[in-house]
Image 1 (spheres, rainbow, N blue to C red):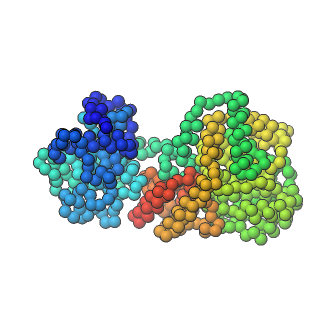
Image 2 (cartoon, rainbow, N blue to C red; image 1 turned 180 degrees about the vertical axis):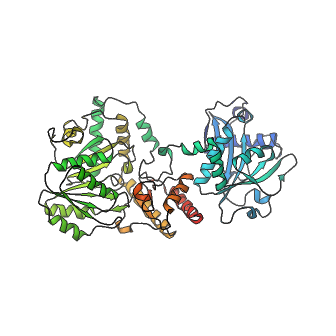
Image 3 (spheres, one colour; image 1 turned 60 degrees about the vertical axis):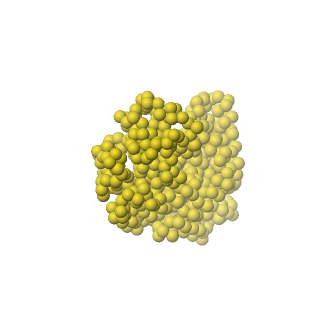
Length: 548
């Protein structure tokens, strides 16, 4: 058991405190003792007892936000969304003071030890609690504010309602804080505004972006290992291991790991296709198919483009007819999982057509690699990245290749020469051991079970959103497992919805130009978030759309 002396030494806080949700037994014991000290000894609200601990009557239902200075509890507050609130017992017809259809949460048991009261600790506790409540979908907070701190509560945006409650020695003012009032407080307070805007994306478990994705703690740890020389034998060995793991994952014959984005990988593929000196066919039904056309044009390739409206499947007869115009040894280039729409294009069917016609199939697998089972056996060239479905950091890309490739020093720039990467074991230039370490560890989690989980979660999410009336762009039979696009109807709705979710801590993709032009917003599951986060997302989406 933790003693009161251990918890409450009245020495100044170091300023290096940590704020978190309480989840350990010793933390709860410390909460009971701070509760006693504050609401028995300091504010005479409850009777004294020999144990000097006070267990709140709603303890089992409370979520506690606490501040720790080492193993010393220096501040806390509790939030609880289950009715009846403690204020329901004190204020007759509490709902008359709440907006219709609101989702309220009660904030209670706010306490900071005396030695930390002249610091920014209270503000930081409040900021953490605000983010938590917003992410849970609450849109108004109610409190019984001690009359000793009314000025502070008003500064944060709280508005009093009703009459004082409590006793003469422990008087409290019922108060509420709406989402709109909190927004206004943020605009006035530099500290609140900066805190909301500075959280790193990779730390946010409510990150539903297609990239950068949420990074698991163990992968962050691997990335933070001391960097080593790309010329060392240990780096060479690590590179060979990662190449082998990628080939095993995809059934590819060979892979080169490049230091750069997926655009680099596709530029390398375009450069390689230029060596064939034969015409090709590009299939495009989304933003990234269109970008393949740009890659081909920049590389001065001879090609035809078969374009389908975004979010609609290709007609296989049309593909077959277009392929029939190509000579054997020509090429076909297609995006597998089209990130811009969520469409999954028919890899097996196109692969079969290419085999029948003697054509080289090239793929952009940037959004399918790691998110679903992928068979690249027989595929001429394919691109992938370290982020997205593999769950590592952005910065590495891959070119998978079927054949052994020779360097073309006289024909291609060195950085775009796939054969030069082959000749040097994927290490022709300076490489990053940090990125490679992270990728190596991420590949250990790239299992069929993880991919099945992504697919199952996407199926659940799609059903939940459709049941709520959200317009999903791609029909289920054509949809990929990792990206879902909502085609909003009301003008400007995607932008408004995205910004409202940003404010609540949910990060969706809506800022890309190709999305904002079409009033679309996207949810990506590359990091395989647990279903409880999807349930919260759907609940918050429903509330935000209802308000909009």
